[in-house]
Length: 118
Image (cartoon, rainbow, N blue to C red; front, top):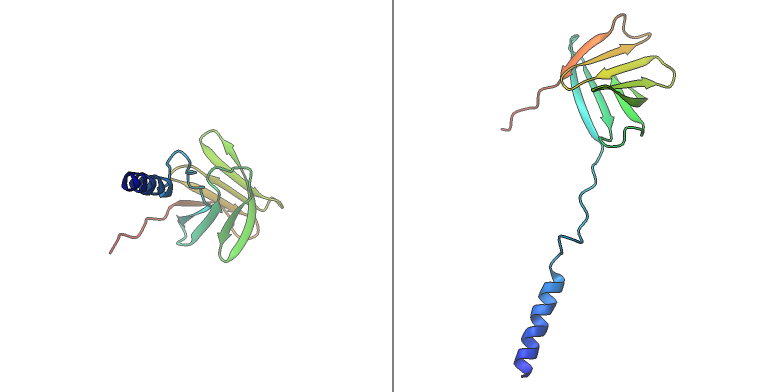
């Protein structure tokens, strides 16, 4: 009888130690950084939280890192800096950067190709 009770206790302890999938929380999405290759050969980095459109995002171009506010417009994301000097429009496979005082004309960009695994 003691063996059966001990075995049942051991099984119960193992079952309690196993994580329950119903109790586990899904992983929180983390901010991501997308790299865009522009027509002039430069790279634009845009860092944002994918599910929190109202949170500030960051755009980096030529070493200038600026906070931008994003809004969804149709199927695109439009972002503007607080001072209005930077305007970024992004869709799935193309983007445009307007940077007053730094660029004379809007700059077209495309997603930077990922490096193949070696």
